[in-house]
Length: 412
Ligand code: ADP
Image (cartoon, rainbow, N blue to C red; front, side, top):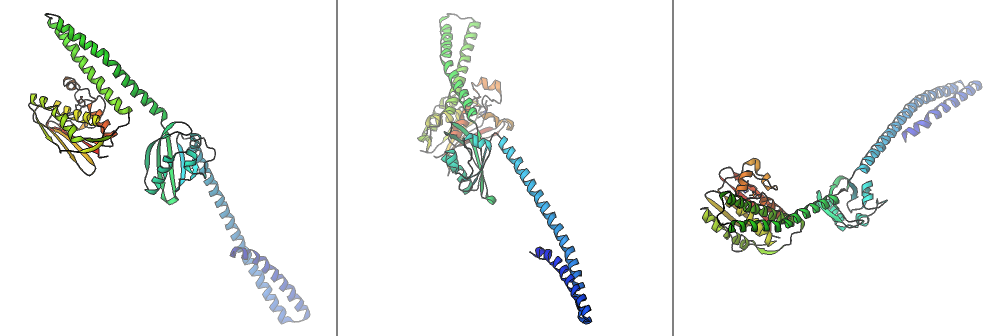
């Protein structure tokens, strides 16, 4: 506003100065010298004032122009940045949505529009565009709980697909950012692999049984087998048994992987007790002290057959890798659920192997593993089952002193 006033004040002063000079001339002619001088003085003052205002106005105009130029430049830069981000987001193989706190879409990149076959999703609710109530809930949860939510989500619309979803809030802007990464083909391949392993394991059963039966028959029927014959046939039976164990473990693992856990109320104390009792004979043979510390009853929601498998694998390992001393099986409960701990005074595990022993076919000592009849799959089965139940499994160990495996299972 002051700038505007200055812009018109400059010429007005000039005009006033000129008019007063004309007045002064007229007053001179009329002979009123005093008044003429006064008018001349005012006129000159106004001209000086006009000149001053005019130069100020020029400066202001220049300032204004500079500001306009700067604003234009900023706007230009901003538009360019936006274009760069748009090009980047549109080239991504990940669907990106930006929503407000009520899950209304503010932005969607090209992949997002393609994924849900929607041309102009902006301004619509997320659920209307994706037809996924679960996706909307993820956005609302991220906003409400002010945290990043990660989840694998199946979609049925517009086609069957599975995506890894991540939502995180930006509280300052009242926005929730959402990304979806499609993993449908990855899951399909995983399924094919699981089915393949399960089928191979299943198909191997019959030939293995036949080979074993034939080797046994030969060994029985040859009246006086030579040392070589006994050695070869004995070795055949041993290797067939080992292969059967591997194929059996593979079958257990792939069945556990490809089926959702079917839980029901089961007494974990009873399961662990009957598994441990099954090892009493072996403990006596190896002169190991098998110590049980179990509550009378510990009910959790779990798959009983799989819990049985976890207990078998942990106790069997403890027995195998302990040459003297004891195997301690303890079951207890805490606020979160059940805690099964199997400790031994065995050979222990060096720190560099501790995390890897849960991988498939990983053995600390491959030769020894074979000798003890291990398949290298026992702990991966344990981890898979426990994690599928929402629990965790961990190990503490000291080389040469023993190991302690802990499986934590939620009550529900
Ligand atoms: P395996 O059938 O060979 O026992 P696992 O998956 O059960 O396979 O175990 C993987 C490896 O972890 C074993 O080969 C062994 O080296 C080590 N391991 C497992 N349990 C114990 C234990 N209680 N004490 C020492 N080492 C163990």
